[in-house]
Length: 282
Ligand SMILES: [Mg+2]
Image 1: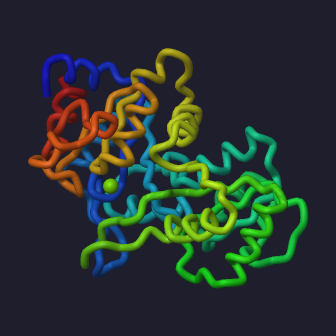
Image 2: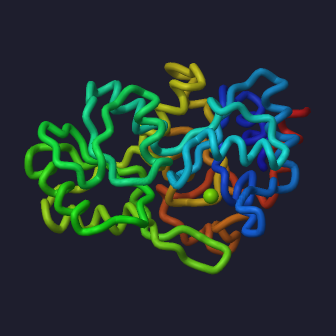
């Protein structure tokens, strides 16, 4: 990292960390997580310094509290409130917009933060009138009646929203299909409406994290985002005009960075979390 980047990290108003491939890796054997080297110490140091942080995964397979518990088991000192998924930012955004009736195409992990926020969640195929938004997330159980109900709600005027709109994610055995991407494609084909993204890399997701950390105004530009996915964390950093630090411990490969679009290029690239620890410790 350059001296300027070290100063940026030292003077950050807050941090947003990605989970998989950035601070931890999924552990197929236990179904839980294993911390990446230095990650536990880095987060503990940031918290000791009194700087707010959020761990923001783009997965909605589980509720945020379940991911937080998995990270605590892997050694992290992390409160439930410090863990975010797209449903955390979706819930905050629905409340802000005054949207109180949402058809959820997703499992319990997708719906949990919305229910906690007092939003009335309508079942994926449940007959319902006056649905204000359709929200898609992790939903491998998706069936044709769900498609019909979602399209009907959109035709009736509901806003189409989604946790995530990326086609693939990395798994231990190769490419996994992003469930909501495929579902969105079907609803868009039928209704002509595109899904509004409420998770990463949207500005909505960034603002939800900044709000949750209590960071406002110009200080938001001093939030540092750390992640391994150019299309998610790095794009979010550019969308929010803040700093994105790319980790090459996950899906970002060092030799592929130069070929990235400007909107997805990291402001700095690191191969381990060590430089961040040293910058903050100094
Ligand atoms: Mg990742």
